[in-house]
Length: 450
Length: 112
Image 1 (cartoon, rainbow over the protein chains, first blue to last red):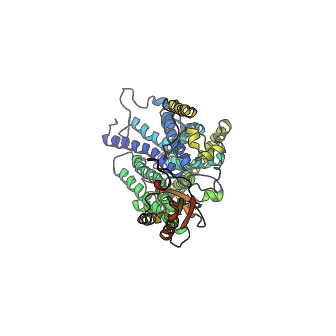
Image 2 (cartoon, one colour; image 1 turned 120 degrees about the vertical axis):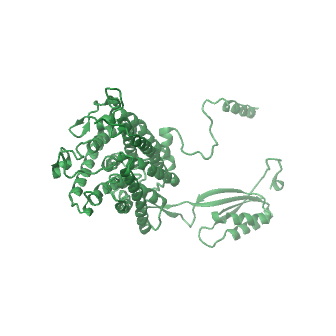
Image 3 (cartoon, one colour; image 1 turned 90 degrees about the vertical axis):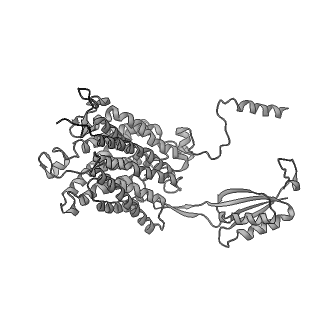
């Protein structure tokens, strides 16, 4: 049967891709507001830098490694569609279609996922990381961790419902597919567990900021954090409702679940804060939004909206408790990428075992989906941890990860980017090489001599 | 001439200014400053981590006055800025040698 272009789906997917791309600048604001003012630019530049590297890498070999010809179910052959050769047009010169959608539109949509996933990691290693090492890391990590996991989960690989996959090994196959297929709607494993584990490993390799746990490292601009959280929520509609690959009821369900879960997670986080700390904070509300969005990511298409309320409450509360662990365990996950993305991603992925309207324990379908969900989460953790550890150690030996302690104290923005985030004074200094200042100063000197 | 410097609670600044204006003080320099005294700082909580924030925001007034007015000005500031609670601030008086009005070149008493 010949594929026919569906303009409705195509329009929605182009919109979704644009929404997801906006999440990365949103994340830059969310993270940027949370660091101290002396490192706001570096924090934001880590996200923008990821846009630069991954935006290029994705069309070269990212798509091919994610959706190209499979190598053992673990990753796509990078040379199969290198530079999108053979991806865009068929032999007749027509745009290749899949599910009513030109594949090139899907390339754009998927590229934005790769970008945001890499950018998510940066929050863990704020204030202290060489920008050059980070930029090199982004490309290598996407290549060895993100593209393979995207392939395994979304392209019929090892973590999908394929007959050769992990789920099929556990409960066998029916009609050539795993009897109990895993669910990862929009990236609980590929995006959030993956980024969260990578963040944890990087923090352990790179080490804590000077003064961590002792000096106040307050967010310097909470309105930026709130703005970033709002943009992330908005962009997440593309992430989740776009992952329905249709302009239809399934997309609508994902949209409503996404919003409901984020809303409930605000409440979950704030309730924990009110009881534990005495105040409901704005940072808590912003963090709750993100925790809820993370948790609903794998589940958005497979929940009832009432189930999404439960998921959001649990995710918000658990993440609010999890972000305190770093002080007890002594690892400087600066902006809580582990506490929000790893924990939230795990909550969403595992909760599907209970809450999935088809296959969940609460809907009378037994424990098998829960087992499968835990298995795919565990495998994703293992893959990301090993790959990230190897990359981090190699880069530590070759390039080094840390700026000097002195530079860290005086602020990474001036060192790495030669800029200041804020100039409230406007007095002092002249442009180097400017012709106005020099004669003026000479006049003064002559006057003094006379 | 005397320089009266007062560090007071921010929410008292309008009251103090009005009282001084009624008395006849025609100008002053005001800065938003931060610091601490016996009040110490306050506590803030970010994602469950409590921080003791040492510095508390205050308003600093600087007023140059004739010797004869110094005590009255100090009295007005103390009376209006007082809440009786810890952290009300300080006022101190220091001698001033010379004052020049930039626009006219007037000095001392004529420049105030």
